[in-house]
Amino acid sequence: MGNREDLLAGARRCLEEKGYLRTTVRDIATASKVSMAAIGYHFGSREALLNQALFAAMDEWAAGSGRLAGQGDTAAERYADTWDRKIRDFGDMRWLWIANVEAFVHAQSSPELLATLAEGQRRSRRMVAAQLRGVPEDAVTDADVQALGSVHIALLTGVMVQHLTDPQHTPDGQAIARGLRMTTELLDG
Image (cartoon, rainbow, N blue to C red; front, side, top):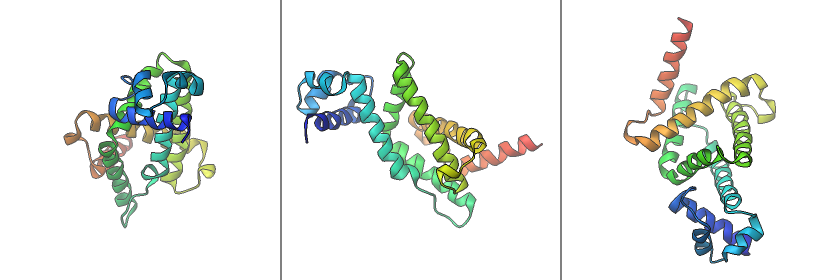
């Protein structure tokens, strides 16, 4: 690997061990065994390097377990199982979700990062709507992206924060499905 790749690998290790906000330039240089000056040369800043490492980890998650369809005989069973899998990911990859929350907080004072996170959410809404509809992303309607995708991203974020805060009391897939059914009943009533 070259210095650039070493820096990305070191930044990822730092995200895993220290999180987004507590990682320093020195931490990354030490973890990557590359000089601190190389961060500026290759990425321009600590933030740019951490962002790239974080987004690469998110893309890796989305390409793997983030896109797993649930198992089961019925749509309701598959939906609940999908949630159970995502909730397991929140525990198995706790560092990734904490780094995401920290990046969101930092983005409130970083317009460039905020714009990048917003674009990622737009892509995620489309991906989620397509997965739920069982169609390719280019076939999902804008109405589904806005309603179905947005609501499920909000739900995903909320469940993730609950799991990071109080994992023993986070709802499982069955409880989430039951809660959505109850919400529908309230709206229809």
